[in-house]
Image (cartoon, rainbow, N blue to C red; front, side):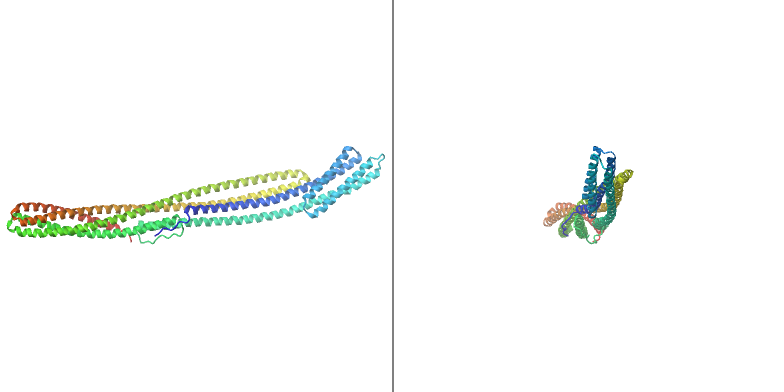
Length: 569
């Protein structure tokens, strides 16, 4: 099986998932802060403008009363200082009217300011008339009182118009307060929807990450567990993702395929080795019988010369048969040696595949450890967010306390502080809403932290599955090492058998030559019989050693077959 191209690493996918969760959290918090800030800024601006208008209207009422009082005092006791004070007060009232008119954008209120300015201008004209009358040598008291009396309705009109402006601004403030409450409710509702959506998306991301990691690793773990039970009949592990887990699955499937081929090859070679060992054992038994027969023949030749020629002929024929059998054994040994080398090479391939799987599993283990550290780092970030939210809540609480104190101080100021009481009350209400939204964000962060805990648990489970896979692959490697050791021992025995067979062939050929020499040269019978007897005895000893080696090789081949039979292929 060819390895598929890895498009994105497992670490990149997990990092992207946590970045997405962090981005959702950041967007939710940013939208919350931005929306609240926009509503608060708009309403604060309106409060500032209305507060300034209310304060100016109150100041106009106050200075109008002061102006009328100064006119009365000036009539009772005229002086240059009082005259300047009245003129300054009238100018200040005019300036307040102009300033308030600029701040008030309501078209309906513009007529009030025009009427107020005209009334104040008439009061200034009347004051000029009073001043001119007072400067005459014989002031007309009736005329001065008449002028002073005409200023009373003007002052009252100015005061009433200022009161209407105050009432109008309070009505506008109440309307805007209700609009602000509706806007805040809309913001809270939208933020709640966004927060809930972020929580659901974060939950889905956590579940997807868990499925990406745990499900394929569990599939690899189940397949590895089947191999640990010597079962190679399971199908290949199928993984859809294109990351390190895919590389691990491909390597595992390749290892299983290689292991299947190796076990099949070793089983075939073990059966062939067992059959060859049995044939070798049978052949060596025949050779041993022939050698024993040759020894008896030589002894008979040494005991009685009357049967010497016939025995020599039989001995030559038997030794030629021995030589042919030894040649056949030598060929079998060469074949067995070649098969053992092939089995050793297959075992080496299996060990290489197992080593590659171990390295891949170790790489996955290192990535899972990095993932665990990333989860811990994200948990630290969420704690920092908790601290920031706590700071916001504390500031909101402090703002609420300051607003309460400002309301108390404004109440003490009487009529002139009513506008500040309304402003302080609105500030305290806004701080309460800010505190509530901070608590909602804190609840969302707690939910995200819980999801991170679930991801941490899934990461821990995946690490345990990887550890189990490493242990199983290590066991498979140990099994291959044991098979390799057994195959090397079998190869050594086969080489030993081949060496012994070559020695027997040489000795048999030498014995045949001796027997022919004895047949041709009967005069040297005693010496030839003695040398042939020694050669046959040496040959018989070598045959017994080869037979013992063949029996041992047969036992080891049976043991190898028993070990291989444990695998289901």
